[in-house]
Image (spheres, rainbow, N blue to C red):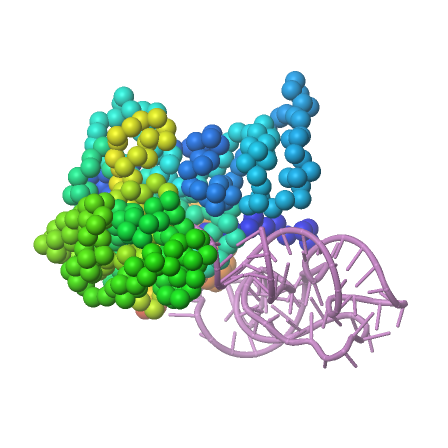
Length: 474
RNA sequence: GUGGUUGUAGCUCAGUUGGUUAGAGCAUUGGUUUGUGGUACCAAGGGUCGCGGGUUCGAAUCCCGUCUUCCACCCCA
């Protein structure tokens, strides 16, 4: 045998059953999106590199797949010159490069690659809004369900190609949007039968406020990244990391109440008000959170819980207000299955100021794994063929196809076994495909213009007319 | 990007300190049964042991490289 073919690292093939299950999730999310008034758009798989680079931080830039320019570009009109600092580049890890070497490297990369695969759906959406600003009626509510690519090392629930399902609103600063998104999360997970998800919420303004109070405004990112790890590595390690990043001992001691923050939304908010009493931004953040929580208490959630989590940071640089993250029900070991937030100036990076946006994202592939683990897919999802006709020969096949035609017109999924194979083989095929009904039309049935209908789960069979057949399999 | 882990038939896996022709179960194909599947019995086909190099009289087994799998970190959906 020749060398077995295979697919690249972190990608997957999907068999018919898996596709059916994935479509079930897609359809559920899509119909909720539309119920909430979102309209679909699609953007290209790859964008110009400059559209994507620098939008996700250094770490994100590293994970962007670049597409090599086509053609014999190395030797055509303008031969490519290697960067002057080529020797330094060869021997120095990317993270340790100086500014001038990084510029050198970027220049070189730009010569050989000008396109890159979509890394998420939010940045392409921002580009879309700015590019089509004159055609768009604000506020604009769009949803987008498409694959994205990241050059990450695969792990559980982590792939190099995966789907995101995003819903965003741009052009409205109203906090009612945040409220609606919490409702939307809740509706989708309820419809998927996934009970006990936690929608964690925080506000960037609170994080800024805390940083201000402890005198570390300039270290906001370092500070939030460290705080984000509280659950994972514990209080002491977090403090250690903060010290390492140059946050003062005095500042860290002011954080003390934060580590022990407990209780329901109201209690946490009260403690935060004390900590942030001197910070205008911080208090604004609290006010926003309270607004959302009050509204949700009134409206109520069906299956999810809204929880304030001050340690929720999320790496993305562009969030300015609310931050969301959804975790799977307790006991399921899985990273977040959704995330989102408010970004007041996302389109600013493309030159359009003062358009506020807020959005959420569902991680299809992770939701799939969670539903699979909890056995929550409806059994009917992958049953595809309603009835299979056994093939007995040419005359019989034609007769069968006439019946199949009217079955199809009535909306049934019906098919004829393509070859006049042995009965046993055809029956085995029907069995493997989990076809609920098999119809036999042989010489005798053909002569009497009737059908033998067999119920594959009970094994019973009966002779009947086409109308009787339709009524039985309905 | 860092550290570890995995790869033998279509699938799940055995394979002794390196030693004849690499095994099993399931699946496939044929038969017992020429119009009856899901359970039985009989038989057959199917493998450059991930790929490339090295050590050795001899490598699935030891060494190096590479790809891949899964996991932790980083980061994230």
